Image 1: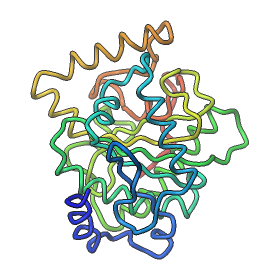
Image 2: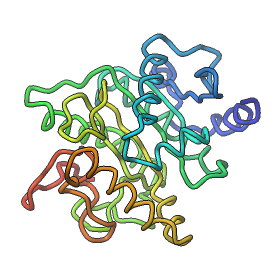
Image 3: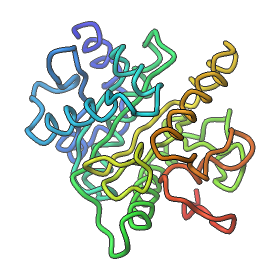
Length: 264
């Protein structure tokens, strides 16, 4: 990963989230086919990070896993990984902001239509049931990231920043992301993972797939696999521009009256 490391070292000097707190909780890592390695530090991944990464690879590579885009990113090595403390905490936010900024810069050099940044957390704090509690924690984390980012960057102009708008996507570092939430209590099998996790997929890659005439076929394959896995489609699934994709981030079934708690 020497070329990658050199690129990131140059980019890191311009990282606006490079605080002491962020460095202490940063975990930006890549997998070279044999082991997980930190790409920006001389430190090595800790036990939780290594176990969570191996679990995520096993989760995605299971024969019945539905998201083929995530599987392609793992197969091609065009993903990055980080492990953090409590979802939504100040420490996790600082480390995640540093790492997500690096991914937004590095992914432009990946020669693939499938790139993703996987962030796994030890836990999330909530007093309500598993799915509603995770949804609350997910949006608390995204709002905390936005609070840092909005001081320095505008939203990605290619999408809407209004979570009620059908053309909404979450923006960070002027890059639009479709966010997929995973957690142990998810009702959908494809969202049920051993720890809470946020998977950041650049929105741009979906538009590139559309332009290449590949998006609809991939979408239909994913939906068929989800029906085979759970017997039905996630009721929140819609095509971009029909309903706000914010409804899909946490994976919890919501009704027509649901409103996104995130207010940029």
